[in-house]
Amino acid sequence: MDDFPDAMRSRRSLILAVGAACALAWASPAAAAANPYVELGLGADWLVEPLEGAFQLTLGGQNHINPHLSWGGRIGLLYLANSGRLGLPLDARLRGHFGPIYVEGLVGPWLIFRDTDPLRFHGAIGFGLATRHVNAGLEVGVLNRGTLVGLRLAFPL
Image (cartoon, rainbow, N blue to C red; front, side, top):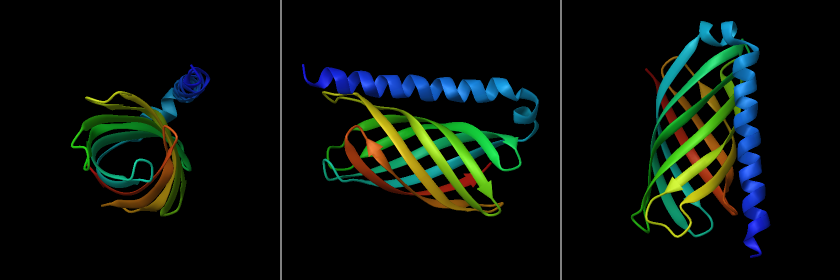
């Protein structure tokens, strides 16, 4: 019963993040549609709690709101190495562009199949370098109540 307030807070944060992403898309549809971008991503994560490695293959997209700000998301396949479970990471993304450097915020649900708690809250901050051929960066965040540290590579399609 003590987990009920934490679960409600996680769901409320998720609903607010999805609402914010929808509001950004609605606020500037012409600018967002002007420069779409799709990428294929690879990720390697270290989950500090429960001491587990994870690997991801993702498909992401983003639309520019203005030259220095874009919004988008990513969806993919997640493999948890120690337990052998599969999952589905789903994140909304807001990214700031500062020349070749990017800084982004990510939030969304991650579904872990064959788990006692299949729906997990993910929130993270990422930063890295973006070139025409590859994006490389670091992501630090939380997955439920545990810390997550990850490396990301993404290739524009």
